Image (cartoon, rainbow, N blue to C red):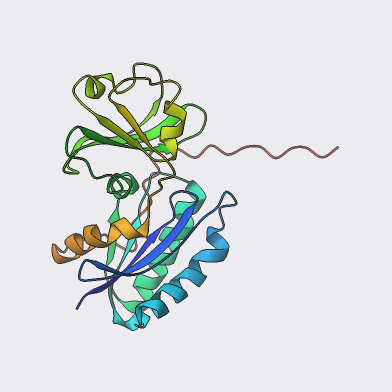
Length: 225
């Protein structure tokens, strides 16, 4: 029996799960505009392990959603997972957050296009076929009326994620299908993480960094009068 703990914090959805040999055992998540990851993540970690009926020492590995996404969210999630892996002496696994998001969609034809909001009219996107095989790597791009035209002209395209919301009014095509209120979740990490674990596809805990894709651009604090 291989218990794996999963953590996904790349968006406003703070999500934690436990899987047993690729099957979901317990899930705890909260989706809120306040980005409560710092307050909720460690509570969720304790709760989800209890719900699974195990202890942390029973874990065979810990897996993190590596981004792209929120800089702060990714930092919190990756730091927590690194700490657990060091403390427990177990391997660390990592899955790209857009791949996790793509698993929200079950399609018989066409393309799956997970999109994460990157502010203004920019999104993080990747393209998968109906079998969730990646056919275009992750990019940061500005949405316009001709975005993803080559896929839309070829068949149905399922846009999923908070980045899809900004596409609705800009990309209007008969093959465009929009899936609302979907975020990367630790629920969809379970089978993917188990496949990585059985293939010994791990990352170096000491040197692993989140997949930011873009350099962080902070805002200057307002001067007090």
